[in-house]
Amino acid sequence: MYFIANWKMYGDLKSLNSLNKVIKFTNTNKRKKIKLIYCPPYTLLQAFYKKIKKTRIFLGAQNCHYEISSGPFTGSISPQMLKRIGSSYVIIGHSENRSEGETDSQINKKIKSCIESGLKVIFCIGESSLQRGKKLTQKVLKKQILKGLLKVRFSNNILLAYEPIWSIGTGNVPKNYELNKNINFIKQILKNKHKMKNPKVLYGGSVNPKNVKNLASIEGIDGFLVGGASQNAKNFIDIVKKTII
Ligand code: PEP
Image 1 (cartoon, rainbow, N blue to C red):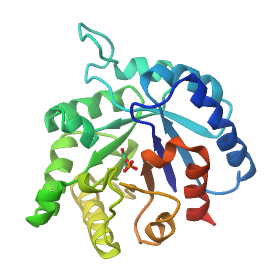
Image 2 (spheres, helix red, strand yellow):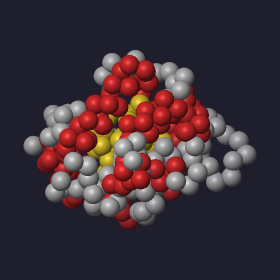
Image 3 (cartoon, helix red, strand yellow):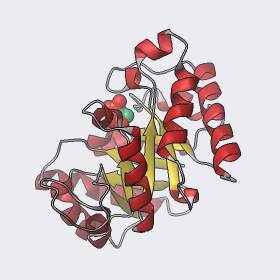
């Protein structure tokens, strides 16, 4: 099971102290099949890496530019820059970035550059509440996957994160049958169109220590992308514990 902490635009150097508890937790649960990935803001990546490099926690970034190495792109960070400072993963296509104008074509270019740089991609997809209301969810998911992964090779370096936009930060989560149906639908596309043998699909959207046990019981879920609740070490550890114990 994957557990990804998306800290969004939160945190400072002091927040790194909260990692001590998480490191201790991973050290005492060495034999459990869990993978913890922290995605702090860019400003904390280097300090995070120093802290976690000898631990069982992995580092990820929250986005990057599609230009693989460097260039005249003010305010941007390239995949190679992320790789060089110790990132192993990067979130691409988060709805909070899509809502600011990030297009499927940019997402596709970013995914290709990240994979070429040796980063693993956490590729986010999800429908809006309006699209869900119009019963367009699967059409939207299929379009996002096909456009985002167009001509992408080595797709085994990609984790899909299904994050319905209406569930992010709202406290609302899909019903079990709905989530199960959509996760299976995503896996079928990845198997049929992208020849992924064993696609990994995570769920993200208002996951917390109270609802995670039920969510984890849904067949097909390979882990969770956690926003708000991941900023508190105890909550994040509880999410992991309730899933695996
Ligand atoms: C996210 O930002 O990816 C997310 C899932 O947020 P939250 O857990 O706060 O809904």
